[in-house]
Structures are given as structure tokens and as C-alpha cells.
Length: 141
Figure 1 (cartoon, helix red, strand yellow):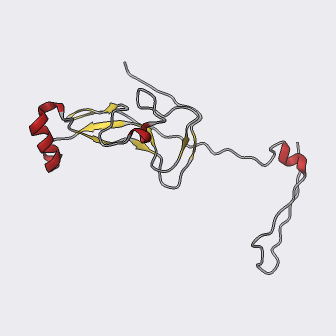
Figure 2 (cartoon, one colour):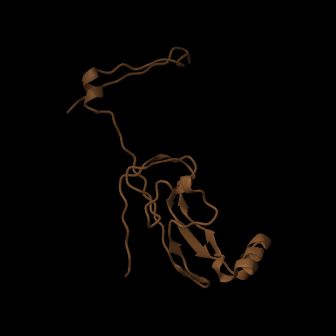
Figure 3 (cartoon, helix red, strand yellow):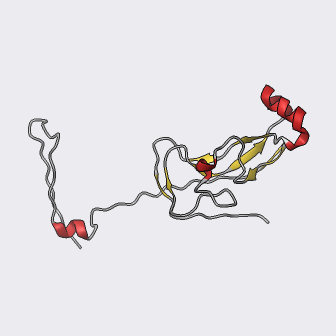
């Protein structure tokens, strides 16, 4: 247990490269270390157009973007993440009216094989970054 009293006083506003020195013991024992844990949730729901799916198979997403996802499409524990990285891969069915001209052409050529889903993956929000420390999966099955 430490009872530390620290004072900091800038000199007329010129504290650009000032430093505060603490005892080496405080640093080695991580006394002033803090951990911030942020929790994110992703649900796969039934929509009017069909069920949403948690998957690694996301259209128009490069393989290197999926590198930290497991075979279910969920981020692996220990992965370092940055803003925009996928935490949970998810696709949602889209209706005929939502298809772009390119998608309608592909569907006309390949028939039903052309997937009519859009990427609704859970991603790391802007300004957030970190390391994955735990993953929990809940299912009604």
C-alpha cells in the first residue's frame, strides 16, 4: 500500500516537455497502471428478409481484413485492434430494391448463387483501439 503525494506546477505555462519523477519502485510494481475495458455486443436477428448470419464469409472484404477472425467470424482473443477492424463478421439479407445495378447484373448472370447480403459487421469504433481480452458467445439453440 502506497500513500503518494505528488505536486505538479507549470512554470508560467511553459510545461511542454516537463516530467514528473516517481520512485522506481512505484513504476516497477505498476502502482499507477490502469486498465480500461470496453464491452461490445452483436446480435444476429431474424429480419423480414431472412435471418442475419454471424460469419467469416463477408462480401467485398479482403482476406487480410479477416485475418484475426476465427472460422465462425468472431475476433480471436489476443488480437490487437484499431478503428474500423471487424470484431464480429455479420451479414444481413437485403431486398430486391436494395440491390445495386452491378449486383442485379451478377444475380442475372449467376442466378441465386450471387449472395444478396450486405456487410453489417460489428467494427471497432472511431477513436478506440486495444487488445481483445475475452469473447463470450450466447446462443438460444
